[in-house]
Length: 76
Image 1 (cartoon, one colour):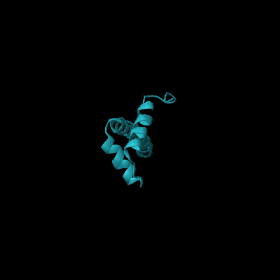
Image 2 (cartoon, one colour; image 1 turned 90 degrees about the horizontal axis):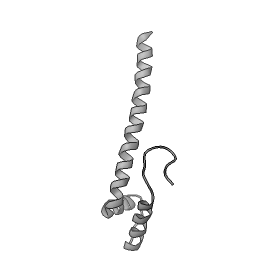
Image 3 (tube, one colour; image 1 turned 60 degrees about the vertical axis):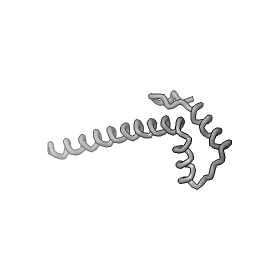
Image 4 (cartoon, helix red, strand yellow; image 1 turned 30 degrees about the vertical axis):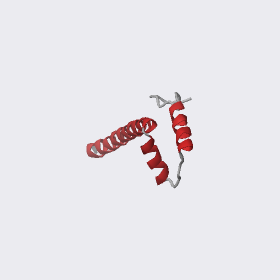
């Protein structure tokens, strides 16, 4: 019985920890992408978009206007 309870608790803790690690990693990647136009261009190309310089500058400006802060509801 204790084995099942410990297994379930471990699964829940692992899922929650993995979620927060993924959010942290994604936030860091987005912050890095704001300052690196080549990374932004590469991502756009992977999505099937070819961006010219004007579109690239506009995308970077939009990303800089977004704030990647900690906590829910603070991105406005």
